[in-house]
Length: 256
Image 1 (spheres, rainbow, N blue to C red):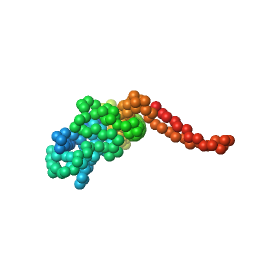
Image 2: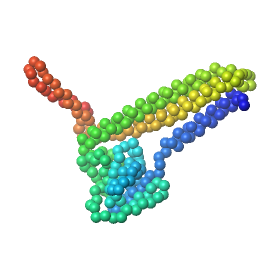
Image 3: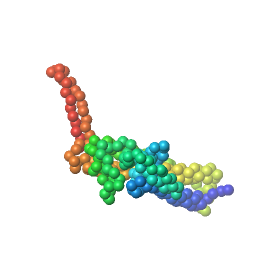
Image 4: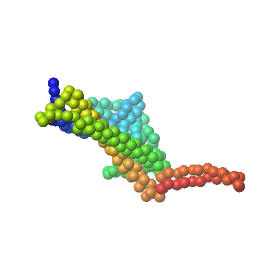
């Protein structure tokens, strides 16, 4: 069955529209799980793992952030995103409110956290040493996301350019039909290159740039918090030796 160039263009447009809708739907997050604490505090989270004694989860608004843990003894029930509910029997263990796996020296119970920006509140209650650690974490994640976004977008645009060049060089008659079977096959290959390039650029580019922006914003907030405290972001120790005086020395480089 022969395919005319106008028909091929229409099919290509429909496919690209479908890929746009699919990429948009892929960015939506799953329905959060609700943890009901024994002190009647409710936590909306994304549970990652449930074992014999603890529950591991990530925050809904920070799915790329650190992993948190909470003891089962502190949980009354869990309502999972799929509607399933799991209850837990009470124990005599003393509560120790949920904390991240790499816990900071100071922790604030969830039940007494004030309203507002939770991430900013956690920055204000964390030690400077802990802030420097998570600053490096989010800054690295931002750089990696930017690299993925640039690489994915560039590769996708190259493929789209190659596909467009192939389609532009095929021969058709006055009715838009291909002159030869070889021209038809070239057009199909060009269309697939355009579709594949667009899908790659839309997927990897969008995901990469979103991660870069999200993690870069958090790194910026941590930096501002450290600057407000008058604390440096990084310390660099450089040992050295003076051969003339036969003495050693240590240089401290502090970056703000």
